[in-house]
Amino acid sequence: MENEEIQCLADSATTHTILRNRQLFSDLVTTHSSVTTMAGPSNLVQGQGMAQFLLPNGTLITVTNALYAPKAARTLLSFRDIRANGYHAETHCENGNEFICITSNDCGRKRVLEKLMCLSSGLYATTIRAIESNHIIRNDLWDSDTYWLWHDRLGHPGRDMMIRILKNSHGHPLFRATRKKQKVIPEANKTTAN
Image 1 (cartoon, rainbow, N blue to C red):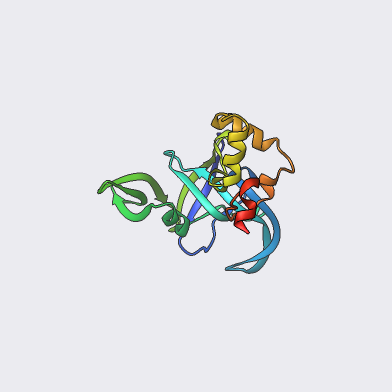
Image 2 (tube, rainbow, N blue to C red):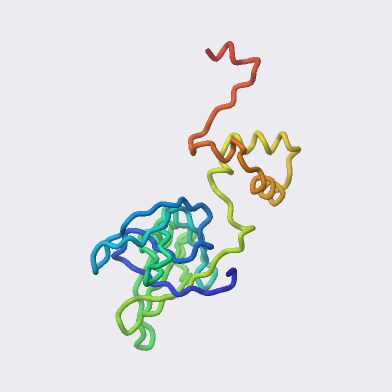
């Protein structure tokens, strides 16, 4: 799956990115809900969560709330999620062919990162591919006080070793913690904190 290219349409009308491949998700919560399409409401959604994938030229797209719909007709990338990653979408014509260019503005210079071709239907298409699983990291864990506490207790293991430890630590409170940061108060200071 890591090298498989997935056809994807860039859609300015969709409110969420809709993905048909589970491997694109780094954090998926199973839910069953409906989505409204042009044909009407449909019970396609089987989950939602954080997804990360690469565009053809290697541009990383992180979607914080993508919908998992394996029975959907198409994989859709929302323009809103393109903007949420700090990129811009601009229309360009070259030799009579229309493209949507995904650009970034680094240090005051505009760079074209990706070109999405226009189909005869007027839709813009591209391909996406999954990132190897050892490269996906949950951002909320890196900012967690609990993460750094265990990192120090385990003798400062490297990034890759810490990821392996976390993946094999089933039932550990680090995975049950909410996204709020929790302040750890040492035993000696508990009486002064109350």
